[in-house]
Image (cartoon, rainbow, N blue to C red; front, side, top):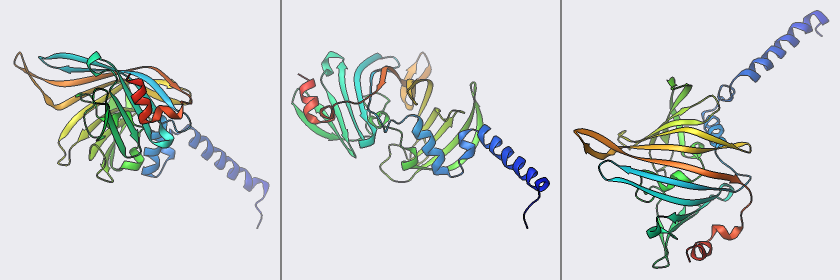
Length: 265
């Protein structure tokens, strides 16, 4: 039986209201699958359509021992899972480089002119950052959501997700992330297999570049490393500042061993 005009009107209103409600919901609320939630988060800080480049300043603070600063040029090609890091300062490390192609990561020593395979899990330049921190976000590929809650994080009404690794290749087997209304991760905690807190990372500042975002101020606090200073235990921490982030096509040569060899001369 075909509905009359009077019967059709409520149906149309209901459909219009449903569309209006869906349009006003945040992206995560429209995403039912947990994997989709993580894919939305990944997409905010990944650049599959273009290459990425920026200057990174990594400041390592060791209580009672002062601080050290590393400046580096970083290049990424997310669609091919590649990155290059060229150390610019300090002078003693100038010309040292990292090259990642797929699952293989090399470190280049300009003194011996040799490439050695290293791990994405290792510390970057003896800081609290890991080599894996310089890759694109792959939460959806590496983790599943095992817990969800809400929490106030400063000015943010954050969604909090507890994550468990899907495989052994990740740097940390368990994570906890705080996500704002724009699907940007504002804080995360990294845990060991025994659920011991290893590191806390805050990302207070992002910069929009094109349709994506770049974390340009990152603070990492090591939960285990530190020392007593004036009777108080102070944790080691690393601050990363990112300058001049750009998206655009880079030469294929930049993602090769030959490029690092040339750049180090």
